[in-house]
Image 1 (tube, rainbow over the protein chains, first blue to last red):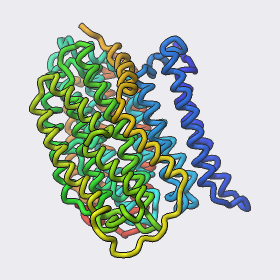
Image 2: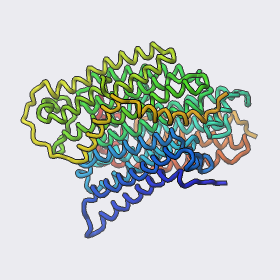
Image 3: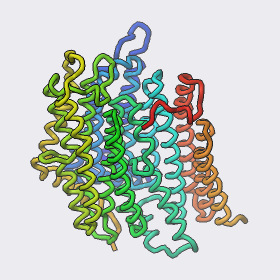
Image 4: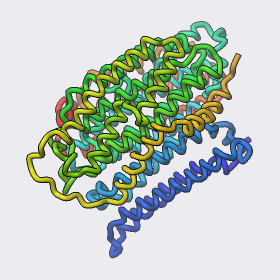
Length: 506
Length: 100
């Protein structure tokens, strides 16, 4: 019987409804004499919808689990604190990206409404992904998100680079979901269920059919390959620089921040719950991938002349640090060890969201009259021309490089500590060495902004309230998390209690 | 009666054909068709297990996969059309605006 507690799904429904209303608004704006720019209205509506959803999510957090039933839709959705944590993070990330989009939609004009609707729809897909422990629902959420983001990448239809990036991203994305679907199908065959808990049970006693072990391993491998594409782990990363560079900057921000957070949430859940009995098989793979992802991301970032592309490689490198966290998961079924690891993952993802939105936000702010501000030459001397923006960019770069007292330092600290606690000292050492390498290219941006003269005189940049708001939030957030991490740590701790609390522990 | 292993083997062959096609073909449309082949091989696995386990659940799942493939085709073909309008070609080797 279908049992539904509507309080549980209210945040999801709000987001979906918001997308519908924004689309409606876009249509109204195009009707005959009413023809006017609905961009700002659509932005306000989207932010309102996401804020209502976030508010409801907060209520769920504080009333958990008395106020509502965490398992709903016959167990297809699971709204535990882990999911609620990510719902909040995704809503916040999307709101920040919408704040960054005001100039882009000013240029898009007729597509402004659709642009915001697609962002909200993508958030809906992500929320479905993180709110479930069922592989089919996960797949549907993942595709909802991906399809919206493919279109967002190519939203500048007449821009050759945009459509090329969209085509590449789409092809690789579809290829990846091919792997994922096939993997899920094989896993279903072994477990006889698409629920992660039951998959874990079935994998744990791998008697059953002859050859079941091999099919299970194939399923595991294919599912992981599909997800590695999404989190941009080396060697499944080749689409990242192209897609990030060709997309408009606010969309790049959205992809780097929200899409990655959702993909890591899903990966974490899958590894901790569903595929945990096979930990001995996937742990070495994660070790190797973490090392390759960090190293290749950082080395390639050094040689980039475009800051946008540099940040794309840097996001690959950060995926590597996040994989270090996952690679420190313990093969032993035990709550305490896993919690420590997941805690560092959640903390890092929050910090990562703030510093990436900040760094991309400064680049967006520096854009003038459609002239992109993307290469190192173009930002030369801007530090003195625009002191506030220069200072903000310096802080974001310090944070990305992991220099105290910024949040980026605390994030790396927790991730590498988790690795050391697990006895993976070598992995932590490689991670720290990589951070040292990354400092070179992050600080180079600051050097270009402050220590070189600009060739031309710098024009005034018009003040933009939404952009300034987003940058202020990121700026303050990074310092707050760097100086007093306790609050977020406690919240993340309570989130992961729930994530792992449901695991079948033997 | 067809054995489960035979069906799985057939689907694996289809899947590998899809992967190989995606990698070696240079026309975006054909690459996309290869992806569809991969999705359909997954559908075959599901139907095979449905037969073996005697339950209809995987068949529902297979319908989901078909719906996803349709949605993907709608968006993907639109992107490919936008790309073709700009450069009169759908050859992946000619997509060189973005590299390194």
